[in-house]
Every structure is written in C-alpha cells, then in structure tokens.
Amino acid sequence: MAKDTKSKVSAIGVLTSGGDAPGMNAVIRAVVRRGRSKGLKTMGIYRGYEGLMNDEVRELAAKDVSDIIQRGGTILNTARCAEMRTDEGLQRAADACRRNGIEGLVVIGGDGSFAGAQKLANLGINTIGVPGTIDLDIACTDYTIGFDTAVNTAMEAIDKVRDTSASHERVSIIEVMGRNAGYIALWAGIGAGAEDILLPEKYDYDEQRIINNIIETRRKGKKHHIIINAEGIGHSAAMASRIEAATGIETRATILGYMQRGGSPTSRDRVCATVMGAYAVDLLIAGKTKRVVAYKDGHVTDFDINEALAMQKDIDPYEYELSHALSYDYSKI
Ligand code: F6P
Image (cartoon, rainbow, N blue to C red):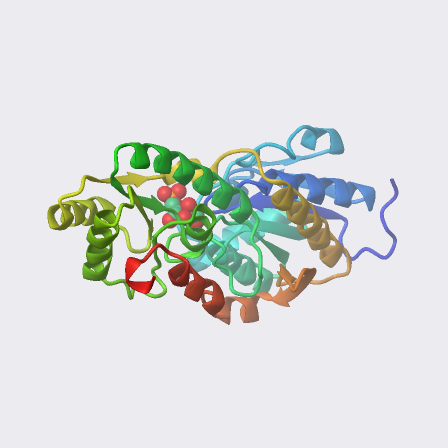
C-alpha cells in the first residue's frame, strides 16, 4: 500500500521494555498492521532499549505478526536497561534509531520505559508510550495492558488455594505481584472474596485485629481464612509464622510470583492492546511525539509524557472501603 501522503513519518519501530505483560503481542501486531495499512515501514526491535542500541532491529511484515494475538509474553523479548538513564546511553539509542531509519518509536512498557522515551524524544526521535504492565501503576490511564489477565490468573489461583485451605481448616496468606502498587491485590482479593487484603498504599493493617478475628471466627465455626498480601508489603512467610503462633491454627504462605505475568491475554487485554497500539501509530502519523496512550472513562486518549510521569494515582476509596466492609468479620455481625 502507498504511504499515507499526509503521514509525518515513513518508518516506525516498536519495542517492549521492562517486565512483560499479557497483551504486549497484541500491541505489536496492531502497530505493525496499522502501520503497514498506512504504507509505513514497520520494524521490530528486540530486547528493548538494549537491543536497539545493538541494532537488534528487523523489518516486520503483516505475516510476521500472525498467530500472536493470543500469546502471552512478547515475541520481541524485553529487558530493563540501566544505560538508558545515562546521557551516553540515550545518545546511543537515538543514533541507533537514525542508523536504522526509525523516525517514530512505539515503546510498550511502564513508567521507567516512558522516562527513556521522553528523553529520546528530546534528542529528536518521535516517541509514543503504550502502557503495558500487570501492575496498573501508571497514573494517567485507567487501564494498563496485562492487568486484567494477571488479576484473573491470581484470582483463579486463590480459588484453588482456598479449596485446600478449607479442607485443612487453615489460614492462607497469598502474596500477589504489583511492585509498590496494590491493584492486583485489591482486585484479586475482592474477586476471590478474601477475608483480608493488605495494600502497600495503605499499610494500615493491624495484625492483632486479624489474629483476633481469626480466633473469633474459628470459634464461631468458620473453617478457613484467606489473607491477600501485596508484594509491596511482602514478608508473607514471617507473617504466617506469627499468625500460626498467635492463633494455634496452621497457617501457610503462598507466593504466586511470575505465573501472574504469563498466559494467554483475556479479551479485555487483547482489545485494549489492539486499540492502544493502533492509536499510537495514528499519533506518529499525525506528527505527534512525547505522548502516552491512555484509557480515560472508557475512551482511548493521550497525554504528554512529562505530565503523565508527574501524575499520582491512588487506590479507589470506595473499592478500598468495600474490601474491608465485605470481609467476614464476626465483630461486625
Ligand atoms: O512490573 C511487573 C512486575 O511483575 C512487578 O509486579 C514485580 O515487582 C516486578 O515486575 C518483578 O520484576 P523482575 O521480572 O525484574 O523480577
């Protein structure tokens, strides 16, 4: 197809950076197919910014992104690149873009990856960020690619732990990912009907209250107790030992770990990834740079990267209040 005559770029690249997330492949597919449909040359950059600096770049045609929309992980591989925090590294990345004829770059990742994209844009490379992280910790957007799949994975795992926890009449502490953010914990915990959900944003949990509640609920006949602990609080094994010692009830800790980052993306992740990837290409075609694609109130939109990086996000107060109000606490009934 001939190049869109109004397009401000003729060749674009796409890379994935930071922790992988289910749905990243769907973004790559959308970037390539949207770009090709507008007559652009589309290039895949392997191993994130590090691969870019080392010219790990190859043209991707429409057929090269067949059969990936349903696959977890990223076909481009990903890496965290410390060199992008240095002036030399940034210059190397900008030079590599020019050497490879990349006029516009789509960066799929989180805040750290966007900080690199913002600085690269200052060196004259048009960059657009697409939020891909299971953590949901990017303030400018209501949604990040991978979150829905990760929450569903965590919730299903919690359901399974609940079966065995109930059979053995145990207390279970289940630690979920999220780095310093508690969104996976909050959603998986509410979705699985957990008794307690511990979030790093709040750090207000009272272990003695939890212990008292476990003892009281057990006395009144409740057979198990599920505590969801966010990675940002951590120390689940030590917490389990303390709770077991104080209650006399067997308590086990399970750390779900990397399984939460894998698996086939849900329909929500695939569709949001497709829309956001195509939208990123549309922004580059329109000559935009230093933007982050976002979902706000159900619609795709974009923000200036500087503004996006400065925004703060907090736990939804109503969801937080419910996470306490709906737990099985005998002192309340
Ligand atoms: O950002 C995604 C995430 O899975 C976090 O939830 C977690 O803290 C981190 O990445 C783990 O990173 P790594 O893959 O470097 O161990």
